[in-house]
Length: 126
Image (tube, rainbow, N blue to C red; front, side, top):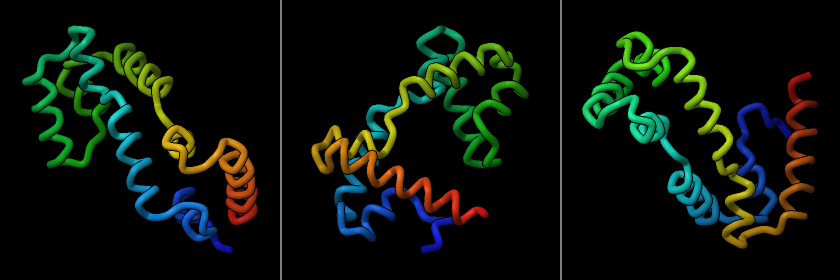
């Protein structure tokens, strides 16, 4: 099985362990629980809502990352961006964990299949 461009949700879908609706529910939970980097910066008082809106528009127009835009505009410095990204990473809800939280699969099923998926992906890259 070629996995180079296959996501874990698609892998579980192909195995019949979840449905597309389950993928949608898990992604929506991830989206709901993920703190956006701009919101974190605003909470810290580093960006205003207007700053965030400007950065978001620039992202849409240039496809640049939040980091590059805020640094180039002088809104944030490198240390602040790193702190925000680190905090965001710590709080990230992974797709498989979202499936477990929703009761769509068990942790045992998650870890068994995640191990299989990772092994197949690493073999696919050889």
